[in-house]
Image (cartoon, one colour):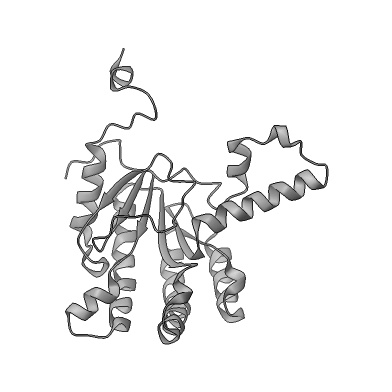
Length: 243
């Protein structure tokens, strides 16, 4: 694949299809989730090689608590074990880790692991890896609005001074460029309450591949698709090519 200067700065991915992939292999869903964690590592490496600055992965949504209790418990345990196993590798490779979402719902042990990992990697700059866990786009917008309302109620902000930029500053990923490319594996074609505000002008790419199948070649194909598109941001194509 030919790489040009239009590599997306920020890629956001819904890692869908672990359970269905495992079922197709006549294995339990848990096995699929484990294989999905392995795919995260290769995707991170691929993004660094391609020159991507930010990678945001949807690991656990606010709606995922509705899944069977056994699966939720397994996913929480997998999250903790993955953090413990991978954080030193991330730090060694210059990767900054952030976890976005309502972390207060997690067990104390997991919150402590998250805080330690974020602190250890906070000064790294090769890639920022955001893990969205107990995250929802509507939750994100609601929490930002609550913070703004408190400022208004305390007399610190005039409601007429509220702008999209000010609201954005109160949301998750306010310090990152908005996603340029959204990838969803597993054949579904929806955003599932992921980064609703941030993906206003994002390019979408859907693939039938299940997440454990999404290898380096698949990542490069998605980026190549992105590079073929003209991003107009409300302008016309003629305006973009005008001298």
